[in-house]
Image 1 (spheres, one colour):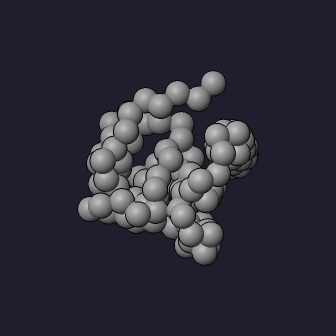
Image 2: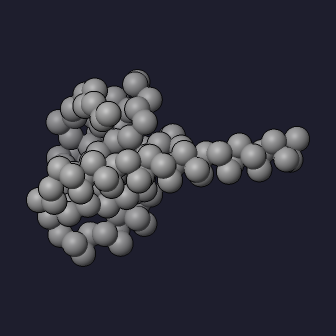
Image 3: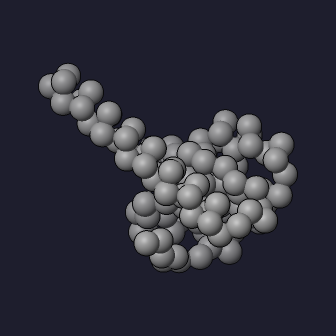
Length: 110
């Protein structure tokens, strides 16, 4: 079950709150004040590489920029709740698999 733990007013606050709370997933709007979602995604992934970041935009064309910014997944605003839930769950699975792979690679090096 997904639960909203906190909500940020802008991208900078999202980064600060993520640093404080270490969430499993962060859902970002591409157009936020102070720091847009693309910049916030990039900053979050630099600070917490294992973090799942789902970026949303009203513009389908933003998909490429979202992934270039480090987003794990992308969704167009206005998509239904069912689709959002599915995308978030799939992103969490992908992040989990990447973390397992990295842990296995690290263990093999030791």
